[in-house]
Image 1 (tube, rainbow, N blue to C red):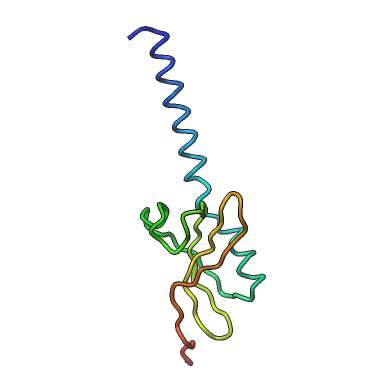
Image 2 (cartoon, rainbow, N blue to C red):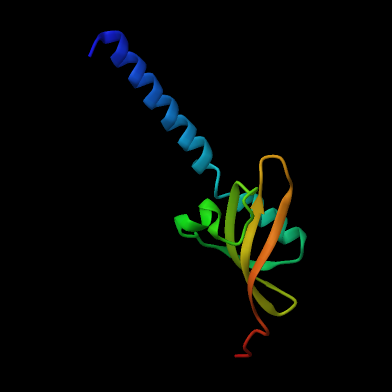
Amino acid sequence: MTDKRAIKVLLIAAGLLVAAMAIFGGCYTPNTARRILESEGYTNITFSTYPLSALIGLGPCSNNDHFVTPFVAIKNGMVFEGAVCSGITKGYTIRITRVQSRLSKI
């Protein structure tokens, strides 16, 4: 392999690495998700992660969403599980995947 070809391959590999970091590095946005959830009245917010399948369109968010932040939170005495979803050219959507009807009394 010539020096010029090696440099070209290295630059392409570096470009792909930067692109992958840009795409997958922002997929999880807990600070913004917390702000969105709190503005809608959710409390006791905790965040988790989805498996990679959720990040490629098989989770609760649409194919137009680039950011997926799964959560569990409380609102009106009920426990909600879901995700805050958003895309580069759209706003935020709270998608609920499960609701526990009432908190247990201790």
